[in-house]
Length: 69
View 1 (cartoon, rainbow, N blue to C red):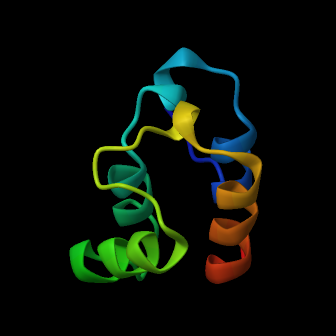
View 2 (cartoon, rainbow, N blue to C red):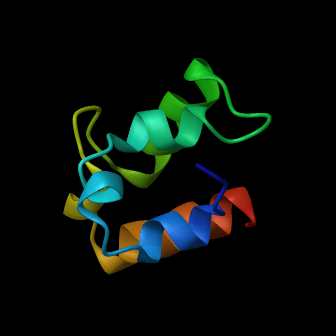
């Protein structure tokens, strides 16, 4: 399809993006693998099974701050 930045994905109102698991979204970023994605989520306090649409505003801001994108 194309590409989008992390900030675009977190701000998206698309149901496709909203249903994506946060861990899958993070793993799709360059330089972020399974271990790093789970470590970031643990530090921020995001559950493994959380989906993008279920993230709160503070969690989204923390992800953007952590990954600098």
